[in-house]
Figure (cartoon, rainbow, N blue to C red):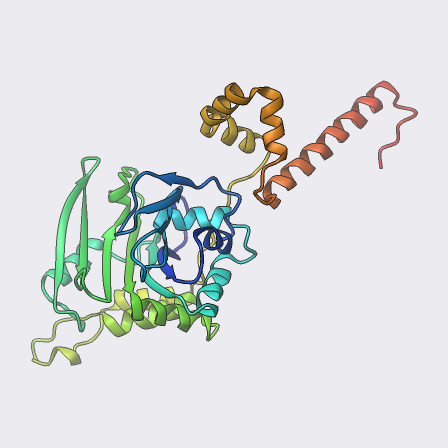
Length: 336
């Protein structure tokens, strides 16, 4: 997701789950992505020998007998899932599928994106560095890195081996923006039991993702104001900015990425500029007649998105014909 909005949002930024009862094709269908051209890659991932891949979404299989089939969607893969899935409610439906089949969520990342200036990343990193926070996590790390010659600060509370860790960083700097925009991300990375508990708290109780995120965040991390008169840090007052963060996320529902304007031009651009080489190769191999025959014999289910484009195209063509007739015979053709 690009930072071209002026409101704070919360979104899923990683999902990985495993099934021992479904085939790769069945899981692709469960995602509502059967119409997408998944490619078989030469190398597997994470101990799996084989992998089907489509735009940052991996379906890994052919591992040891107890490994089953793994689905992994990175942050970009989550946006692709939201945009291309034919499921009526993609996130609700996929979590329903996971829990109905007693599948395990191996990893779930949820991110809060601050675009309005709630968080000062320098203040946050300073507070982490100076231990001005309360958390069950015993480790933290503050780093300064450069991307596109722009310095970006980040703080991680917890370890990569933890079942839950919190990462706070300058997303605008990471993306290389130099226009002064504010984009600070607070990200929770959860594994196994923590990931499943988070999803179930939202799914089974019909609680908004913002309320669950805010509650978990405050439970695991609290930034505090130092009090020299009290040696017990647990009694120190929570900082205003952290209360503002927790209060803000609790009001936010799941971000829905605005889909592309799938019109005739966008469809043609995808076919000719992104898939053009593959189309040209098939035309050369099968000829135009054979190519069209293979298209008619394809087994993938029709995508409603493309059916709507066809319907709109036909309607526009009919409209043009009517308008042409009206221009030629203004007294005969009546347009309602």
